[in-house]
Image 1 (cartoon, rainbow, N blue to C red):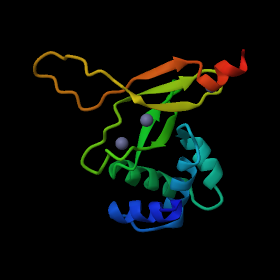
Image 2: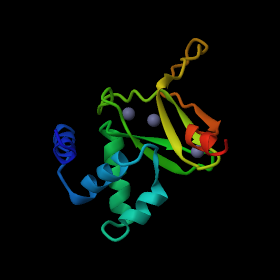
Image 3: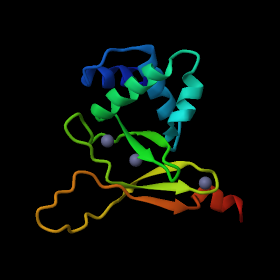
Length: 144
Ligand SMILES: [Zn+2]
Ligand SMILES: [Zn+2]
Ligand SMILES: [Zn+2]
């Protein structure tokens, strides 16, 4: 399946209409090996979509289990495509996110699951978030 077909498929499966703004966001997010910041998306899509449109696209994608949001250490929203396990009912993005303080990329470390902490009785965890900061592999290599 090529990428365009895959995106069409994803939108149909999620009950979303195929719009150029939606396809564009999918295209941008899928081309990066790290999460994409909202300001970057605004910048790239500025000519074709206004902020409100972009905001709605991101919100719908998040609701449908297509993307997840990661806040970096500055509180800026970054978005990454979800793995197959996510859907409209349930996200499964309990993996560690890595915020590189040299290149400022946010990586999804999908193979590194967040251990679920034991909480006092009566408490119920809805969402877990763990951001590690440090140096990513690419930056570490460069400094050698
Ligand atoms: Zn997800
Ligand atoms: Zn880096
Ligand atoms: Zn992630």
